[in-house]
Length: 441
Ligand SMILES: *Cc1c(COP(=O)(O)O)cnc(C)c1O
Image (tube, rainbow, N blue to C red; front, side, top):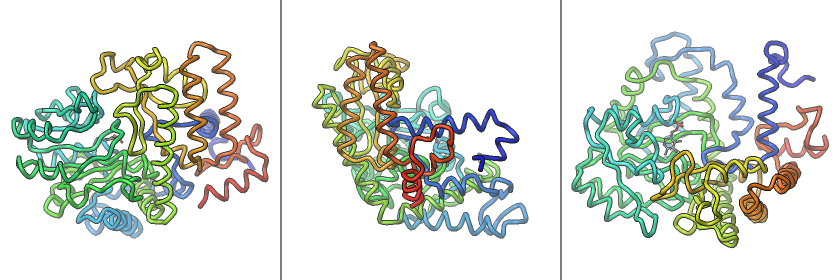
């Protein structure tokens, strides 16, 4: 039977590109720490007829008729999320992480109020007060920085800055910080200066739900997370808060910022929370961290300088320029050429530019979803070193690309079935059947 038969008929160009993307995701070692593989069940919910309907409003309070099923779906997503985080209130309607942050700020800040987040160049997010983002234009931004010696959060320094800047909100939660966050310290600082404590756990939600990183909830006043990173859900986001902010936060997203919620995403978020409540998810989260440590150790053996010297979570930020004489952009291009997908990244106190910074950021959520363990991380560490010490040697890059494509054949990708690519399936049919059965777990 033809795979994606309707697309075959209507738009074979798009079909070919989707299949090419499936093959790319199968045949590469994907190390971008904000990416993952959603399960087959999450993909089914995301691609369902729930995309056909409008449900402006909230369960039981909609502007449109026809909500017999969507009210139940959204309620399930909300209740599962509340139980998972142990919080008073969750809103699952934000289209993605950035609008979720925007809605929280709209709910609790006035234009011109001071917002204090980690500087973008040191691992904060655009929406934490960066000058070209709405968050730096609408609000006054007083960013904190890492400690230049330890490259870690310096809570005393943050406290001192908070006393001076008197922010209305302090944002904790990052995109390139490899260490555990001490939420208690942020609570103390916020209490002392009278700021709202906002936790943006987008990167580490899976680790928190799996019990391998402490949770900021119910300590934090407000929070957001994306659903597509370590949580392994659909592309989407949610806002999390104490009861006293619930009404303001709901109003801020709808009617404040958005119209109808994406019901197909809401359903897939509910599925992701169901999956995350299973014992296998705890193992998954623990393995993400074990894998990151194994990969970090191997890079250290090869002489790379890791920011903060290692990792506590899913993410590694390492220096390529001073360690190996190759700038981040050249490094990430060479890695991609050889079958390892990563992104170049500023390192703390970088002297290079954001377009060609000194480092590379990698993470283990995706490879862990494929069932890779410590032994595979050692191999990947060796390959990264081989690529970055031979980045201009096309023959070496070719050889490694071949080795990685071969290596990747032995690992499933949740949500994908290689038998669909009949022309050049990477598996024997029998092996593939077993793999697919596993990927549906
Ligand atoms: C990914 C991320 C976001 C934004 O998510 P988008 O869905 O890309 O808008 C916000 N904050 C943090 C910390 C993130 O890692």
